[in-house]
Amino acid sequence: MIPRPRSGDEKLLAAVGRDTDRLKEEFFELVSHELRTPLTSIIGYLELMLADDGHALEAKERQRFLHVMKRNSERLLALVSDLLFVSKVNAERFTINSEPLELATMAGATVDAAAPLAADHSIGLFLAFNSRPVIQGDPARIAQLLDKLVSNAIKHSDEGERVTVDLSDERTHAVVVVTNSGSHIEQQDIERLFDRFFRAERADRQMVPGIGLGLTIVKAIVDAHGGQIEVASDLASGTSFRVELPVGDTDEVQVRSLREGTT
Amino acid sequence: MTVDKRHVVLVADDDEDILALVGFRLERESYKVLAAPDGEAAVRLAREHQPDLAILDVRMPKLDGYEVTKLIRRSEAVRDIPVILLSASVEDMHIQRGYDAGANHYMHKPFSPRDLVEHVAAALQEDSSASRTTE
Image (cartoon, rainbow over all chains, first blue to last red; front, side, top):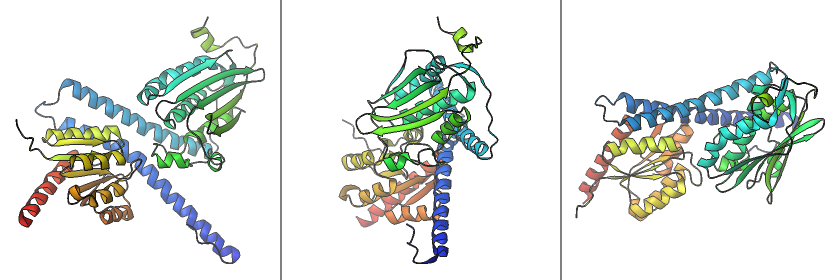
């Protein structure tokens, strides 16, 4: 709570300063939590394995422990990468490569990669497209954008809900819509959704892991590609993120992913 | 029929890897483990099974570790059991809040599972000698 300033700018500034300090504190607390949680598993399971001189652990258990440590190491790496990415964007040192990309194939890979996470949470994950839009973009960044949108939708869904990825072609641009059927975001949260480190009230209340960088990264990638992103959310239909990305030169025949999979 | 005389330990954490880690380590020491993925489940298990000790993560959905501790302290059957809080926070303010809620011990994440079981054993020992002297 910030005390209401009684008079003068000075008091107001002091109050804003306190508010910023509090936010900074909350941020470091959240980052600390998000770093320490996977470290707890990595260090804990390592201790179990190192203490196993007498080889009391079964091979199956050792294997399971190794998988847990790997998963938690990846979680840590993802967090560190996100922090570095955002600092790069912030310092305007973020550049993209550009090549023709076929979105349906890329979205297919994203959905395949996210399928185990969706299954873990009993969430239906679907991909739909009538056409196969081709855009000019950075393959690593577009893959990151799709991964973030899909994993975000899964993270913010409850059991039994659906996440769908729809692709369409609107001549000058391709459209990707990622929808989760159940979760609803409050209007005041929508306005701040792309702010760095912002987390929706629901995410905080339900302790959804994360430090509020996913959508900031999505927005930075969309901007760098000259695209647009919009959010719509209501109680009846859930929340959807609509991304428009400019299509590339349609005469381009060097479409990498088209040659790889389809027809 | 044999009566199960093992100590029962309630463990609550919303991170399933940490929940499994603590559960595994305790079972190796022959404790009987009740595992809860959130605060509400922890309170329910505490009331239904009356554990001898509770290990609670602080940041949990539905009810956090402080609230679960308070509810345990208000629940006739389990009000005196030792409560150990686990937290990824290192803020003094949070530690104090844990003790104010009625926790006996506070451990920082990451923690050593060996240290944790040592604390569990010590707390149960203290608890049983305390109840013997009051009997």
